[in-house]
Image (cartoon, rainbow, N blue to C red; front, side, top):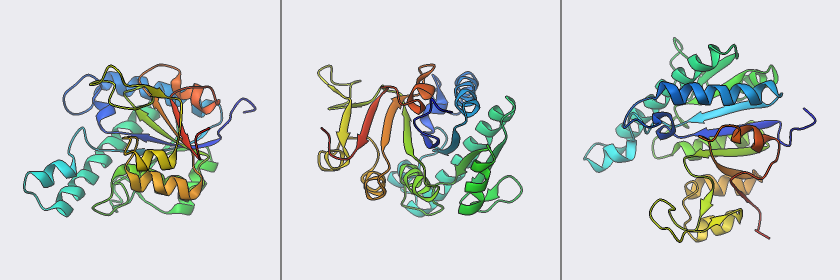
Length: 241
């Protein structure tokens, strides 16, 4: 544990990440690889909590743009995150990791209700905690849920797992002149509209002094490098030097 820079971390996984190379749903191969990476850091002594999205199954905003009531669409999106949480739990438990799913929407048959003190106690006992159903409220993203849960459990850092290797000045998939930023301030992310997380999530992290690391979760070993404090991805914190 002496090699760890961060002991308690909040990992934000998008639903799209679970798709892997598929167009919809969950890619079993990627899920297995992700579980292997998580197993490595847990065995190092990291207290790991995860917030997972549901965009690989249903995205509330998309439903709203297609004429669905926004609140109803968001609740459907929350249920999608529960499905992803159960799939991840299954993959982790196959590797012998003790895991608990805590849902912001009560469904006792498959998940524990979210209770802050219970979540912290699970972490202290070495269990991986997966937070499902976002904040339990419509109109809030799972990014905001991640920032909220990170603050509630007193996480040392919020890790934003993506398909790119950090924060860029523009979308590197569309703009070949996009430049990677190794470090950027919360304020620059908000003012310049850089797509790291939504502004509410970044503001919440800024107010609570929780640094954010944006990194490529698909590259083996990256998660372990981040928790050891190695230079991986992009760091979002106070004013950039």
